[in-house]
Image (cartoon, rainbow, N blue to C red; front, side, top):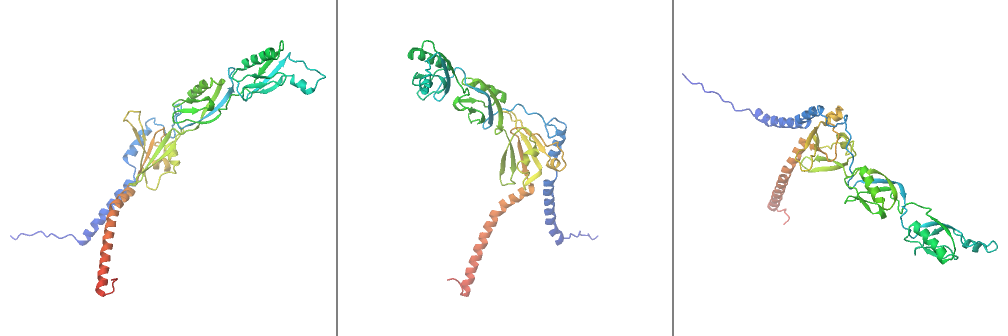
Length: 374
């Protein structure tokens, strides 16, 4: 019998041409789906978050007491800023001095002379530490003395120097405010202290507001009579949230967002005007650091479309200090950037080669026709 040979037909030209097109269409479809579909990790995280007590937009928690650190700015208000009784008199202080049983006033004498014999007015401590009681009584050194000591010094001066038998003296401070007002904003310096002017500085780093109040009042008690201080935070600068955006092969950008205790993922992204044009809406997450010395971290995927388009708050987490929001770049953008990095150098090399060949060909053609440059 005659064997029948199988007929093998070569692939048609049309099928050969369509094969690359189909491969290209499939690749584009896959990349498009990668950039548009919600990943399984996001779906699983959303399901898990709904069953846990992770703080989100609709079930926020109270943050633990805030601990101040550099470079926070504290607002201090002095409720009681009175000089203590043991405070020493200094140049520039005004003293109210009144005295009786002193030199008698002569009604027939000159009025100015009678005024010189009276001691009942404000007297300023001079730069040499003295108060001038007038030409009839002279000057008394009171600088560096307490108010009580100054009274005894004036009394002894009137009795022993002026020669008055039994003078009576009263001395008081009309202005009992402290040496310097401390109310206002105070920056926590890099060493963890706040400056209080002439009263020195106090270490407050890592303290709560109640602890700062106690520390400042204990320090001011050396200079002020029973100080009372109100403390608040004027600027939260030490606690931040980081937003890291993938540039799709062109590096990564990092933005610091101040933490005030109530931010969610949507709040943080709103502070940087939302997602960039290269961001992948289906591939972003919150990375929460663990304790010091621990490699354990928490990674929570974010369903951006559900938060913004459907108002589903399951993955709109309440943020904590140190949280990182990472936004991955769109795969198409990343692929385009990668191809550009690979193709651009080759294009430049080929361009230079073609330019060189074209130049040589032009020179040869010009020489053969006699119309060259040489």
